Length: 362
Picture 1 (cartoon, one colour):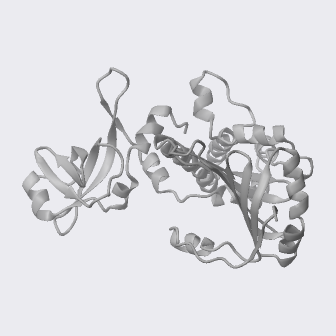
Picture 2 (tube, helix red, strand yellow):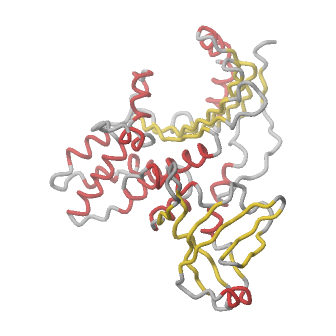
Picture 3 (cartoon, helix red, strand yellow):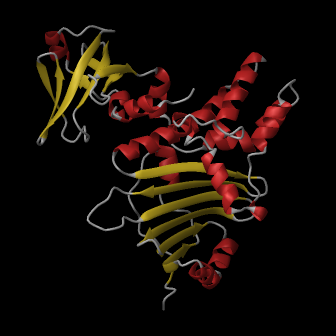
């Protein structure tokens, strides 16, 4: 489905903590307010100094401190009564204001609830390109053309140009709604549109489209994550770059909300896993628009050594482009915390790193 701007903004106003079943009301309070299973109620969350209040009707409930970090929000919720009599609120809609128009409630579909809980990353999308799934269904009548278009989106590393990369980013799916809002047509090579077309064709032929649907969720969850950061005046987007001759690269770009500094730093992250190079993570922080602080983790020792001895050449190439490497840390190990994040789905504490630090200005 296409995410409209109003729906994207609505979802960004819902704190995902509600969806995790942690917004509960004690049995006695639920009974006093008269909450019933399946009931739809209107609720308001207000920040009052160090206190956060949940208002349902004329009743106030104290919420844990810092549970809701945004502005005051009004939403509709469906009540679920547990066996012990306590109530759990699940958001069913939020209040949307448009200009001078009075606020209206916009319902949130299960699809958007699913997006909020969808784990980040592009594992499902990568699976579409690398698992042989597309090849396995290509024999079915009428699918050859759509599969060729999807596989044709892959980039060539040996001939990659800036225009190729720009075209792929614009057609990844992140900017679909912005393009449509300007009454412009989407490119026929738009990745999200092609995958949606594939789902429809698979359904028509009685083939399970679940794996493709999950890949679309990867893209749409990334869209919502970008939108949520924009609400906080921050920039963030991520995408997966598939290559014909290399595998794939996960790429993300972020810029924190403006602070006292004139220019907030930009952060770029790359991750790839390749049979020839092993697994590689690269983090680049750009300060004052030209100074680069870089960190690289490589599991393959040969890749580590090549990177270590290639820094001088890289510094020369970047200098020709007006950029300067302030420092480059290179580690012959896995990036700390990656496995823990994958298993536990949460960020782990920063570890002390051991590796080689190269001061290119020395």
